[in-house]
Image 1 (cartoon, rainbow, N blue to C red):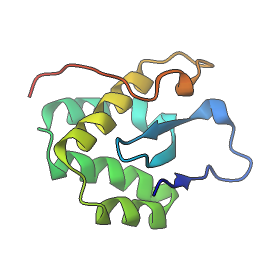
Image 2: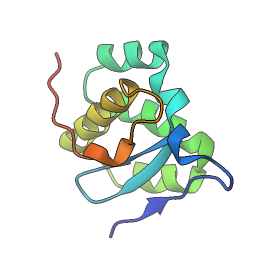
Image 3: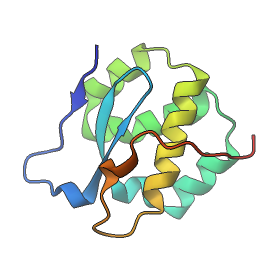
Image 4: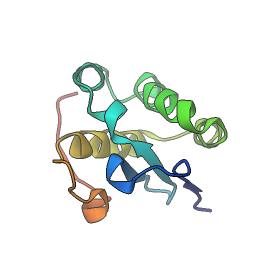
Length: 112
């Protein structure tokens, strides 16, 4: 069953992005945390395993603890973790005002 993490009341859509995992789960997360150079460096250096997804879920947890707990309990597989990573990188390269919904299932390549 798909569910959505709603953005906080009064939050502007252009300051957030939605990402969708292969199982249909959709989350709305602030762009600021996802675009930080330190976060991207960490994500590029960490192999696609639970450590990577736990870091991403840690950011989500700051904004919606219940949603992060549901994602943690979902026992995400490597393809789902990779989809989350790809979306993180895609959105971090967007320019202000660019729509984050334009490609919710980005296919990217990266070194492992």
